[in-house]
View 1 (cartoon, rainbow, N blue to C red):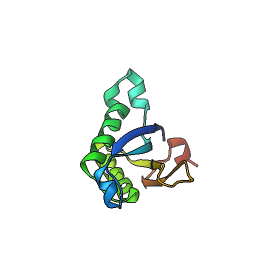
View 2: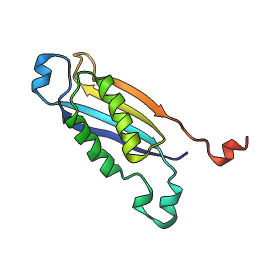
View 3: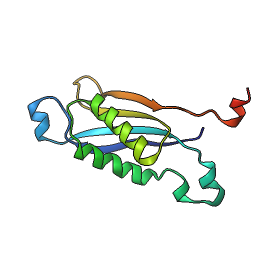
View 4: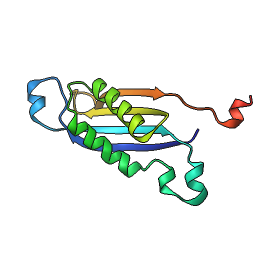
Length: 126
């Protein structure tokens, strides 16, 4: 299966458990890898037959800002479900990082995988 990815998407949103965190926007850094058969888009150079990473990037930012939560784990789960349903993505790996959240760490975060990776036709024969 082919994969389309977005790495290092930086957004500002409200996230956090502490009362002061609910009053500010914080930076999240998001990576997403999505399974997709890119051959149909490549055949005739057609954007509408692939995943539009610009549209997905915008959707991630809007979703995060319209759905504030306390935990990165909650945002990851809800965002993964939303992306899979909205863009018909069979499998994805989503990483959410919160830089500066822990004093001695560059970033902390969560990574989840949801859905099923399909085997390519050559792998199915084996």
